Image (cartoon, rainbow, N blue to C red):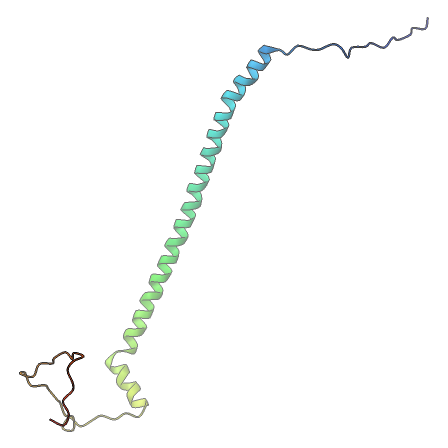
Length: 128
């Protein structure tokens, strides 16, 4: 009644490769790898477009801020260099109005055009 189990020695049995399953695996890989690569490339491209859109928006905001700052600086420059502001600042510093009769205007005669100095020419001394 007792049955003895005899160990089966099947280490010498070699299973043959199923060529049909190998072909199916190659077919799936041949279709799957290009499709996967296409989907990966498509996803990367869309993410890059979104990233560049955000970057363009950020740069437009930065450009607008710089333009606004430039306009504010030009306005400040115009305000500070206006005749009234310069005159007011001169009065604060203690400058006084000059008498127009005291101002002497010196003009060069029309026949004495300025001549460029050359290294060979020497300045004339004493003649005025």
